[in-house]
Image 1 (cartoon, rainbow, N blue to C red):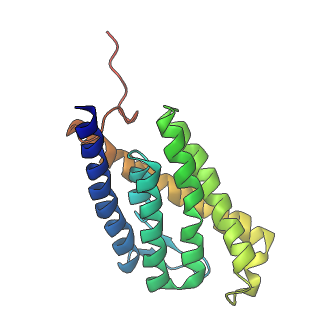
Image 2 (image 1 turned 90 degrees about the horizontal axis):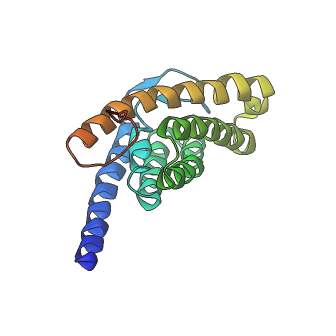
Image 3 (image 1 turned 180 degrees about the horizontal axis):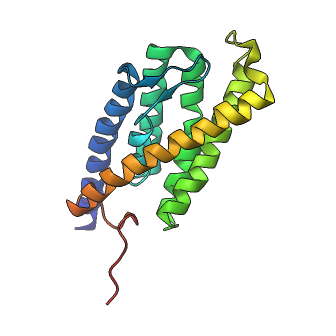
Length: 184
């Protein structure tokens, strides 16, 4: 029985990884972007597949990051793809924290900070190489890249919570921590 349960979980994770990776690849191709000059961009809901993937496994989260990196490379070019690739850090940290049963909302906050830092470091390191000389300004990195990334992450967390509630109520996910437990 344990072997089939493990095999079923493995197959389920492959299917979920495929679905969420497809979404993370497709979302950057839609015109849901706020008009910021590159190297910055905001595509609402772009992080939702990765945030949801963290609740399944670190491996599923990595797959979605790869999908969004490819999607952003196709739609907006290398600097935005590099920023998307930096999501591997918050996705893995978040997935492992969720496995350890850390409070879901605390995970979202920690991931928001890691997300903002990851994108700011990416823009600082690779912006000039990709032709964005002004991208190393400290004001730009803190106010635009870090600040707006954290806000964007928060918006995508709200969207993710709505989706996670639906997945939990449908018994597709268990104990996500987004629905308060009833105490009697």
